[in-house]
Image (cartoon, rainbow, N blue to C red; front, side, top):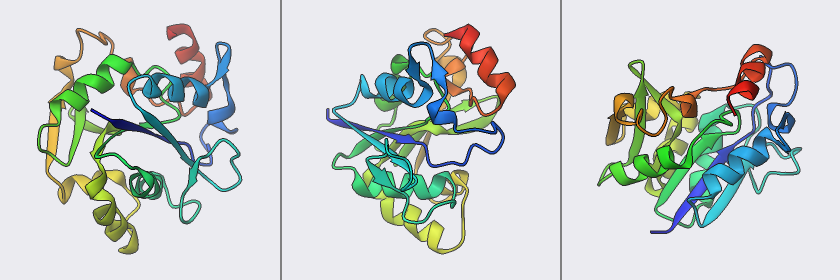
Length: 188
């Protein structure tokens, strides 16, 4: 099955205070690490970011519109049916977790893990056919990816079904503050 990895990195990193995607993580940047990990199960990788980010392979139609805009751009640019979508600030994502979500999607439009009762929408699997739905949400002024869950067929996977391959569910941790960054460095 051909699969695209869509890495979202267009945010301004306001909580971190500097560009998260460029932070060192081992011998690579956080973005390079997430791209490598998600890309290990995909035939194609799209890095969606702002026009001023040289590492981007596709761009948000309009900057500063949030991750929903990045998702819209990534899904529109994808040439595959299935796409693993991961935010660039999730450097502890495990390819096995992504693969399990891919395997669980069935006929649904998207598949997300439910972590502590909340959908982890920035680490999931989305079908390209959602691109016009996402664009419609954006056109209506919506900026939250979670809004997509109300207008799509969603396969939810309880996180307890992922603990055998990710016991602490680190795959779903967003490293968006300096404290989280320091913590994540100890987990890698």
